[in-house]
Amino acid sequence: MKRLAAGAALALAAVFGLSQVPQAAATPAQETATSAAPVFSVMDYGAKADGSSNDSGAIEKAITAANGAGGGIVRFPSGQYKSKNTVHLKSEVTLQLDSGATILGSSADTYDKPEANPNDDYQDYGHSHFHNAMFYGDKLTNIGFTGSGTIDGAGNLITGNPDSGEADKIISLTRCDGLTLDGITLRRGGHFAALINGCKNVTSDHLTIDTASDRDGWNIISTTNVTITHADIAANDDALVFKSDYALGAKLSNGHVKVTDSHLSAKCCNALMFGSETCGDFSDYNFQGITITGADKSGLGMVSMDGANISDVHYRDITMTNVHSPIMQKIGTRKRCGGNPGVGHISDITYDNITGTGNTPSFSPTLWGESGGNHISGVTFNQVNLTVPGGNGTMSTAVPSNDADDYNPKSIGTRPAFGWYLHNADHITFNDSSVRFAKNDGRPAVIANSGSALRFDHFTAQRGSDSPADVVVQNVSGYCLADSANTSGGALRVSSSGSSENCSS
Image (cartoon, rainbow, N blue to C red; front, side, top):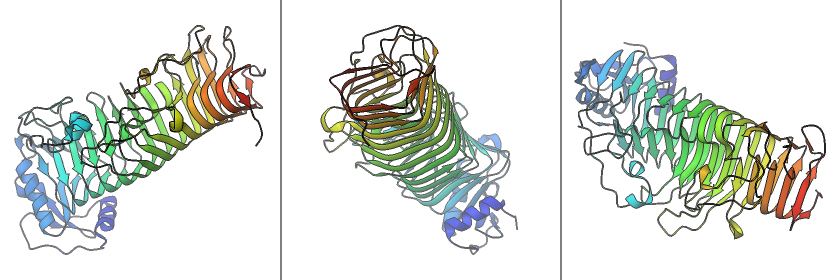
């Protein structure tokens, strides 16, 4: 009898809803957990753990045995397990990687080939195909990866579009119900360390992802009921991203998500992101206690490009450093989704106790809605304090260029405000917040163009020596500045055109 780690035992007891799972028919490979589920060591099914022999067959045999017993743990003792083939996961099976256990990817080009998908045109290739992975499963229940070991693509997974036999992701799951990712490390994942689509009831604690030399960390697509705690994700592309595409041939809902006490970084792209694939609606997201240490696109990014309605999203206690655009929201009109989607909406978003430092003067924090009934609406900033690089001279305050098919911060031209640029936005409120620059800037701190019900309470803005005004409002119905000042304590200078002031409650 071998004793499980306490955390793994408790997790499996919760998964199976039992305090004791009966042992299946005796085999040389089976070990019995003391308080949860039977344990199947891959070593007893022929794994060599020598770093060169192909252990994929042994892993699959252990998974099949655990599934056949009604569920169990497939255990990887310390060692190096080369996996040259796609491992097909099964329901009610958790893979437990002990300390010192590493599953290695292969360059043998013997992974499953990408499956055909009639919905290829609606999302990028990597999002459209799932079979070409180190671990794959579809319509599975109660599966997991736990322990303290590592799954490492070892530089053999593809970051672009793979050829037949090549894998571009470590974990690839569709339509799963009950997924646990606890304690393990995913490294060098190719295009994705983990890609899940159409899943529900996902939990993760102390997951580490290092894809800083590859691409994405974790893409969570069309998924509901997610709890992530103590994640540490360092990516090259997007670190932790929530999407909804058309890869499964339908618009699927997303939401009921909580992410807390985590660290994220993204070398080239977005740290914590919604989109760009945004077919189905998103609702009920809470992010708290997150540190972001780099993002060459958005620190906190949110775009609706394909008709999605994004609402009821709340950020709290977040610190960002070295990000291109600390906060960005954008509604676009790409409409890359089946069923003739319209234009989406962003509404009911809050930011509380956020500190951010930007690293480029061009991509000021931005809210960019579409015209007509597709304005961004109902965004509140409480104690949001941002410092941007500054360093620009004066420039025209006219609306910058915009590529409505592109979600990136650079899709909008250089913002004419060094701080906040608000376009087609209604019911936007700043409380006890501030924006400052690291280097003198000739642009206004804030420009709001085309919107309504814009309010600043106890807002502080740094003043550039050559700036024409501190706050510029253009065609805004009902703006108000109350108890607000520049960093020297003077009143904010307001330039208003085509706008009306309204400071009533």
